[in-house]
Amino acid sequence: MPTRLRPTASYAADAILVGDPGRALLLAQELLTEPKMSNHARGLWGYGGQTPAGDTLTIQSTGIGGPSAALVLGDLAELGVRRALRLGTCVGVEESAELGELLVVGTAIAGGGSAAAYGVEVGGTVKPDGDLTARLGAQLGETARGVTIASVDAHPGHPPGPTGVTAADMQTAPLLARAQKLQIPVAALLIVTETAAGELLDKEQLEKIEKAAGRAAAAVLST
View 1 (spheres, rainbow, N blue to C red):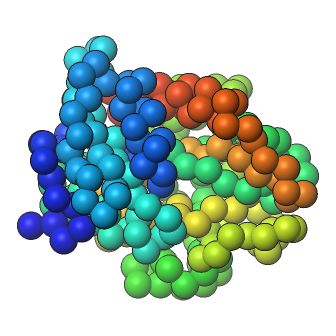
View 2: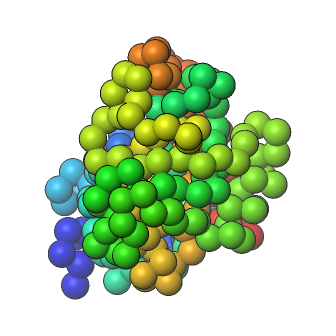
């Protein structure tokens, strides 16, 4: 029995993972014809249902930070999830990283200790599932680019701490490390919501991009 999630409905084999429970609700309303809440324990809102194409899909929030995301993924594995796409946010580190830009993670560097429990020490790298990542890139085409990111255990700050990467977040590396241990294919798509200078993406624009990214993620998982 999962230790963090308390399922109130069945889980699909495919899942979109988001940190923010509000984003989980937004995507459930956007992607599912009749979404049903599958979890509300610990504020980790989860939803399940069918897409308009008839595919079953779970949308699950994972909370803040790598440890929470990795633990939730473990629970999802127990509940029958077999593939997942992370749809999250990040801080642009390179000056070229633009607000609202979509980044397909090709490599994640462990910038903190959260991934160490799953075999990736600080400074080590972990890669997402190659097949899901390739399909995600093909689905998004020129609207996204493949990058290397760093995952840290605290907000990157201004300017962000990591160097030599395009962006930084707080989840991807530990999540991918946990996925490899569980032998679950996982890929990651990030939205740049903050720049190194502290500029923030406004809420209305963010929600528009989240919906578009969610549709792309659902399309990838339908194949």
